[in-house]
Length: 500
Image (cartoon, rainbow, N blue to C red; front, side):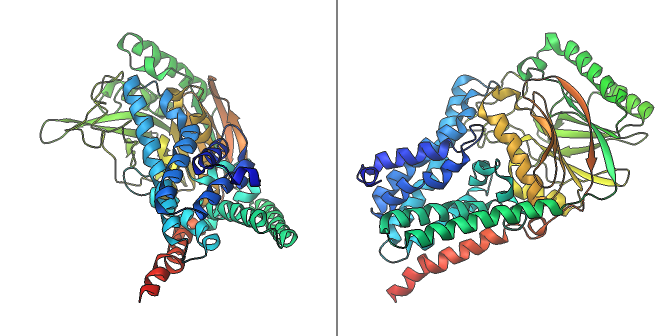
């Protein structure tokens, strides 16, 4: 270990970046994250502001490039746009780690770094989740989905509790290596907590019993290449294919049918003919459906505005709409389209650069059951999911289209994020992905059914209903806010007080 610590700061940053990057799915190396930060901690604890910014930024570049490389394989845009998006995202995310390193460098002579670092990283993840560039996808909790008992407390502390735990373990192990005193006590203390979390988490998983109510849901995974779906020459063929899958779903006699994101290559609200055909089948079968669709409106200036939406059709009722609230920058809209507008005309024949986000956290009703819909990227955002649950949702549907990302890490990580949302809010999650991964997730994070990537499937699952909601659903990021307050008190505010 001493040999490693004598290496230059940039080499230690790279080692940490590689370890943490590969701790993310789909490589199933989540345990790496418990030692992956140690080289970075060493260099941060022994260098000043400027050097720490450099090493933190380099760590962020390596780690985010490995864990988020899938952004660079998006087939839904021109290669130059995709490459620019990947580079911009990695640089943006790396800046947070550079700033974190700089803060440690600035405070290292005045505060207890072993105590302050875990709270600082929680603050980093929390602050990074805000605004139009909010990115909770990369939260450290995503590395731990192979170890469900460890995740059970996120229904109280959110995913930020995992960040505090992971960094605390790294800090303790680093202290053990550095001090070589109380090694047995510290190691035993850490092991006891680790085992305790596993046992208590396992015990909590056994406590969740469903109510006596169930609902049968048919899920459609068409496995259609999204690049071909909107091609005019194959549009009619796609419509016929989707209709055949819809027929299979009806034959399963479910209570409800879930289609994936942008399931049909048409604007359902505007296309009266197709919508009427769907409504006729809904009326005849008595089975409601939720269909992903693009919507378009004309603003007062005559400009076309697009929404990524979902349409709910129920028997003998008028349709209802949900517009996706949180869009993906540089994939569904351009931040400053008047200055830089690369999404104006892509292979969907629509101006994705002017997509708009909705504002209504819509709750649909299926008989006596209330549910809400997360469209694709929204399932990565805890704040969005908990608001739906707070509004009364008893089931969360997810409509996704990860077909743009091929067989990269993206679709696998996206499915694991759905498991986090299920545990956080103690709610069943039903996911329909165009090319996968579709499935059903219980409130404990246990996967009841899972359809692999790249498979055509129509299947029915019986979904048990639970008393949805949790401490996190009701109070949100109280834990992250508390960590921010603690960080300020034991860090910057303590230093300011010393000046006076």
